[in-house]
Amino acid sequence: MTEPVHVYAGECTTTYRADADPQRQRGRVVVVHKPDGTVLVHDAAGYQPVAWLTRANAVHRERGPEGGFGLVAVKDGERLRVESHGDADHACHDATPAGVPVGHCPDCTGRLVRARGSVTCLGCPAEYGLPRDAAVLDSTCDCGLPRMAVERGARFELCVDRDCEGLDASVRERFDREWSCPDCGGDLRVLRERSLFLGCENYPDCGTSVGLPDREVVGTCECGLPLVAPESGDATADADARCLDGCHRAAR
Image 1 (cartoon, rainbow, N blue to C red):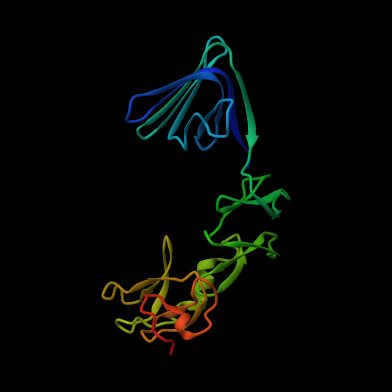
Image 2 (cartoon, helix red, strand yellow; image 1 turned 30 degrees about the horizontal axis):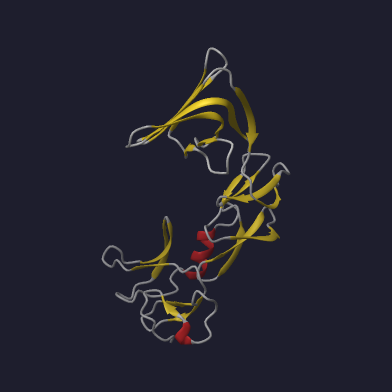
């Protein structure tokens, strides 16, 4: 989905104010105002902006009487003002996320890219959020979207559209009530609060909970909780596995 990026160029005074005294700079610069509220002020040297404000809460733009412009961006206690002197150039361009191509959109045939934790279409508003550790696969779902691989105690290969194939439902089908609570003997349920975890069914009488692993489950600890493969790869022996609560006991 395209969104407008505003670009200004001219001789400007830039004033940045936070808790300290304001910092002022003057020169011929290029100012970029992105759709997410980010404002960047670039001069002739290097890639680093001379002033910037990332994802401002509010940005106000105005045109001056002689073809100039004024721009003010505000975020919490920060304030960035750019004011041109005399005539200045202004252009507005459509822009999209830029990322690694991963297929074509089944809705509009536009290019799909993976960028900033999502699979996004460059031709329409379609966007599909990804788990932070997901790998987008070369295979395609029956709906036409790419599939992804996610480790949650086992490897799950699912459509990137969670309304098509839900990660939570797949993990619950595999691991819900798979283990017993080491404290009260109740079943451990697969639950979600921001992320998936295992929680005792007897809450609040029993508050046992452990994070669902992002690695393969390779056995069961003496305490009753899952043993997971070490971060370096698959476990080659019981001693290499780790209990979810860190007790590092041998598998049963």
